[in-house]
Image (cartoon, rainbow, N blue to C red; front, side, top):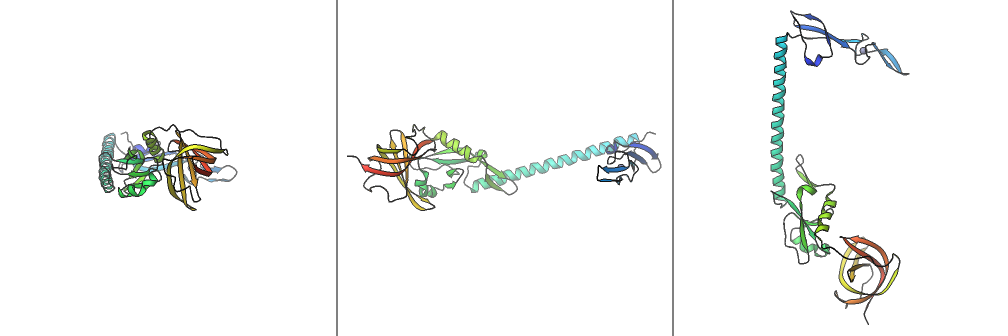
Length: 292
Ligand SMILES: [Zn+2]
């Protein structure tokens, strides 16, 4: 009778079979010492291999199968593996289903549309200026998105909202059941905003450090911002399509000058920088005078 042993012993050869006990003695070359019986680390250690006790071979006494028994054994093993895989697949499907249900709850709680959740980004020249209105509308702020809402809102005139699919900027963690912002969310959000913003024809003016004198410009904006050093005034001007910006830490311009007025602007170019897709010339040490 030819006997076989379990497939996990395929590297072993059968030395002898005890037919009464249905046991086989099997052996193979010791992996650790390569059959030498010695274990050597060059220039460091040399001694008897303790994996094989110096024999150079590993010997085992294992169950022996007749060909019929072996076939049955293999069939049983295969069935067990299949059952295990089925069970695992069912577990994964259940977790998936739970995770989707949990995500729907989380989305609903945050005010998202649950079938096709989108993040609505607020765009406009100066969203900071309308932040209180936005807060009142239920909008929130995140550095990655700027002002945004989980559903559509009616933003003030001159402002707009642009959608970004939730999946593109957010991740859902099924274990912690939390929504997190993707690492590249800012790039995705900025690209969506830039695409929706009307294209600006603004160009940079002058050279850095150059003193520009008596430019005929229109005052287009005046707002206050909070900085580390306190409240600062930010004036924006337009000369044709070109945008000029002045961060003024002093007391500001003549309060009689209003947005829409044409004035004479003198200032030194501090830097040229693109902001919200608009090329802006930043000035300092400005003097603003009425014309004439
Ligand atoms: Zn050995």
